[in-house]
Length: 638
Image (cartoon, rainbow, N blue to C red; front, side, top):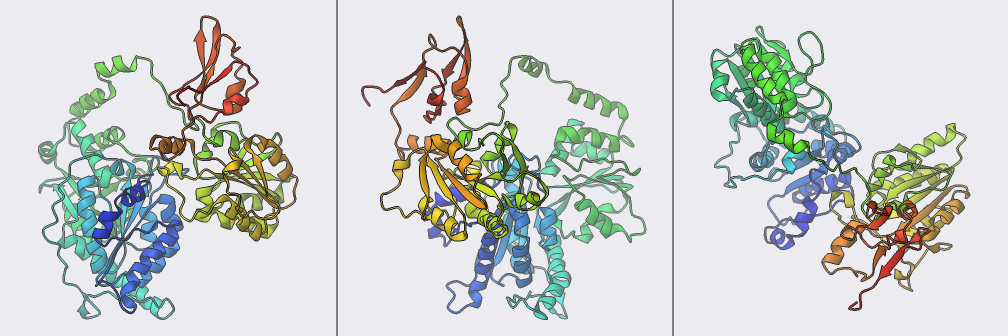
């Protein structure tokens, strides 16, 4: 997740935040977090405010942007406080590195009518971030701030000196100097008045702010240019790298008549810079990831111009697909696309020479790639509870969802259907009416459950659907850094909540049934079993009519490893080895544990099995294999 560890960084600097009057509130989910930030702007409308104004910042991944649309729109209609302002950070994962689907958040931010800024490196994050807060305070709207993975993961040197001055442009609205209206009375006619102000006031104010503060800049320009290239954010730097690989730096670009516009604010489109940029050009080439967004707005600005240039982007002038609207753009992929447009004026021989060089790997790289390499296939960590918990009895199906357990899709574990976060199981509420299958299991992580998944369980109960929710309680949001789930409750209290909702039967399976306090308040009828009875528990629950729950309680192996290294958790002294002289290499220990630390090795006596000690997280599930070759060793010093 591009913004996945911001919360951990903030929590590690609580004293610094306190000294600077910064309040960090972990959100249970993204739309509740957005509503909390909306509340920060209402504080000064209430009696006895502590400060003259509050700056708010919301952050979330692309799916969090999508689910927060209603909250964003309510916040936009309300408006920010005149001494406040809000920056909404949208973490986009265009290549789907840590997501079920790729994201393209500017469309959602546009739908909420937020001005959108798009930084391309760490320096621009600092600069546009400051401009973003000031833009929000000036215009009255939240400011969207698009982050992509490559920028979030960047290491670089940046100038942290404050911007010398930020200009608040003179702007009249309804015959008066511009001052946006903040009105939390969200009912007609007030909401309609606010809607009009957004369309005719705030977005126009944003355009003026961008113009006078130079958020959009022509980076290369001469009077005789024929081709104009438009890009923003990380894509702008991909374009410049691709042009450089074609031998075209600033001097060559000017020589061949190529103009470049770099957009810092990608919505709303500031019209004057676009008209100035387009003046005298024969062609505009818009380079952007995913769907047409910048291109669409530029067309709108230039449509009524008498001498508008040809425009290409997602499609060329013949209507054929050109710049890919899928996956992630990079400089290597852009080089041939740029060469195709440049060939009208740049010598073809020069372009071909450069493209041929790009297609030929460097000799040193060829030598390196000839060596054996190791591919890291996505898989559960050693000792991960999902190795066991995502197995279902023969003849049963299970639904997938969001979390590390999604990796079970890559295994033969009868997973059918993956939903968005928080709706796990709701797909079966619909599908169950149209199939002879009577029951499924539904995997759902504890983080997802407390985030929003409890509503899906409530939906299944309301429909009396035959489903067993398998709650994978591992105490960590492992995909985004190992944080605790906000709003989590202990397992005994969770059984009480599930029973109160109407879950028919609950079984808890754990690696350590003795860890619960004697005074733990369990829901009536809850059974507490060891984890090796998982299959038995599932077979019982699938026969119960209605909604049932199986809570599989075992800590995240990687987070447990971290805690052991920090002295925060008990580290068992015991280690497991395999006597290779006895091992027959049958692989049953690997089948039982599904563990990466159990792997085959070739010996002079044939293939045997070995425990990789440095990666072993001491889960010991491998001991359940039908084998006498295991040796458990406890050092004397322990």
